[in-house]
Image (cartoon, rainbow, N blue to C red; front, side, top):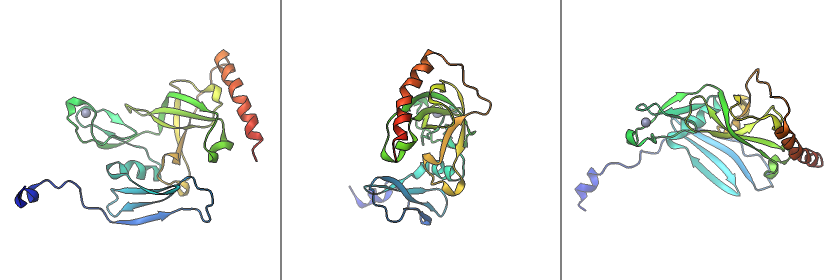
Length: 221
Ligand SMILES: [Zn+2]
């Protein structure tokens, strides 16, 4: 390969942005090794966000073209991406369209409403150490707005037996100063005005399954 060919070759990677907005929230005197987000940085032009995850050792997560989604969480917003050709919309976001006819069309950003509906769900009766006292935990895959895919998060403010497929949800963010630009900055709750359906055999069955979990949690210090 001649030198000339190399010069003409398309530049594969953009220059690395300068990161000057940086936050550290690593707790002091951490003894337990585990999983924790300990900081993040945002580039001068606001387009790129990196996060620092401590999981036995320190990892840097470079969000690249997906950065706007994570920055949006800091601001209490849900950003999705949309294909300008076919209109398909995604949250979690895609950088390029998945439809073959769109030939990997680059997506554009669109802000989503803070509403969703349950696609599917499960009840966690066991978890990592940091969440044990919150068991049982309702985990849902929920469709936000008109997204073509579902996103996983916790559902609060409802008895495990009362969750229903397709039920309407609202997105509730933590207080601004508590947000870290991570998925746990928000959770789902039933939409205002939603009422659970009356007791039925399936709800009885779920109630019997979760009762020992509640009892066990009470034994934790
Ligand atoms: Zn498309």
